[in-house]
Length: 161
Image (tube, rainbow, N blue to C red; front, side, top):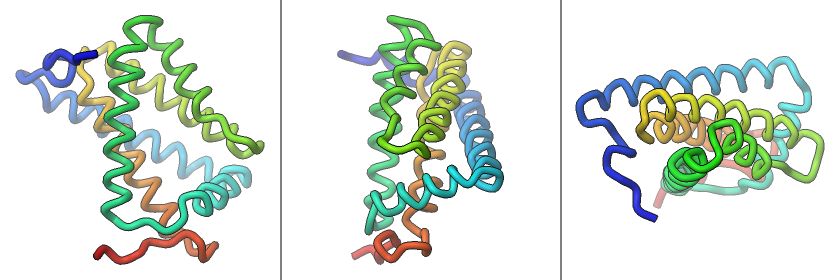
């Protein structure tokens, strides 16, 4: 599968893609922080995810966030959305974020919200830069927060070598 350059970014208005992505990322992060404050299952999910993440360096956080944001947006918004539509792609994206316990339902709902937001940006702009930027923001901030979690000594940020 090859991705056309125009699909990645509109050179004439790349800054709009950047702004839409940053706006969506900020809104999603704000929504998660509100959920975390209001719902005990959101806090439980963070504890579970922090334990699963374990010890990671800053470089590992950046690499994981960047690789997953680019790969998932190319796959879901760049390919699947074109084939089955934005709602279908967002639904499958959410289903792939299902976990084994009840708190993971929030992760699936958050993924659905992100998939819908990034899908809408893709439809609006016809370029992947916005969805990639928004997804990258969410991943970087959330992975850093989980790595810095002090409620469990198995998850903390290790110094870079």
